[in-house]
Image (tube, rainbow, N blue to C red):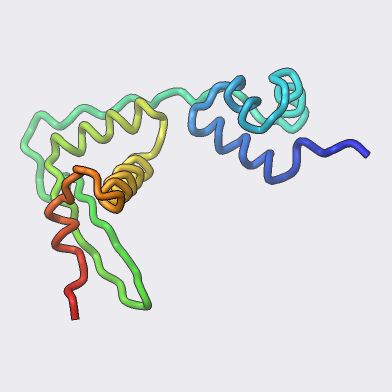
Length: 144
């Protein structure tokens, strides 16, 4: 019996990889098929292997921003039924820089911020020289 290469899970993986901007060669290699097999299967299933175009990053407003116009980010964490929200102290310049980087990667800004936070926490856990930002130190639970 032939092994089924394109399971429903693989099809979802292909869609996710395309959304993340991966090339067809990369996708084929990751799932262990040839580029031709990938292209034929995706064509039959109506899946476009074309990478999404980058959306233009909005330019910052030239007039002073009102409080309602200012982007703000916060992290909400839930642990053992208790929820805590901590605002990230990002300047508008930082947010603009994150938006440009996210657009360049073809990813939502929330995914980029999540990846950055995860990377910082992993580096800290490995006792590398990565300093913990003050907002993370403040968010750590107090010792009882």
